[in-house]
Image (cartoon, rainbow, N blue to C red; front, side, top):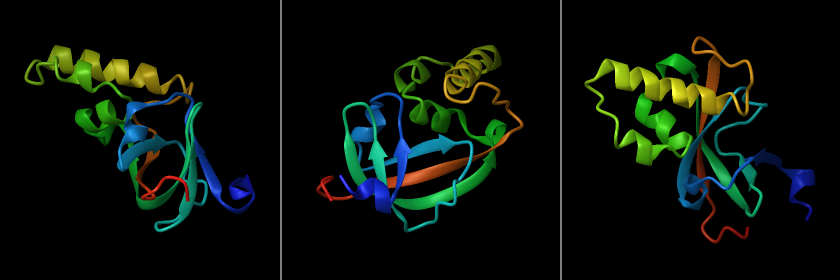
Amino acid sequence: MLWGEIMQTIKFKYDFKKLENDEFLTIRRTDKGSEIGQSVIIKSPSMEFLANVVEIEKIMLGDISTIRLARDLDLMEEYDKVDLIDARQTYHFKQKCLEKLKEFYKDIKWNDCVYIFTIKAKRNRGG
């Protein structure tokens, strides 16, 4: 396929559930020169499709809301069980999110700046 020669590829190590959605977020360590409106290839172990970068937000990891972390990391089922009023439960859940992020970025810390990409899949996902 020639897409990779022309467009940037955003790779996913796993087939996250979010990749089935028309629009989803992904947290990345760098923006790799991506721009809003840019067409990109989304590639996971079993999927490859075209998408557009709708938004790029630079933010400190620790400032990302718990629900956005849960959505990005496919932890919504666990998030739904957390009593967010209970500071201890929230802390433990956020630590779990950090540990999952460390699968991709070994030395990531809460005070690191990251980029949240909002990605919108092209309608037919085939181009």
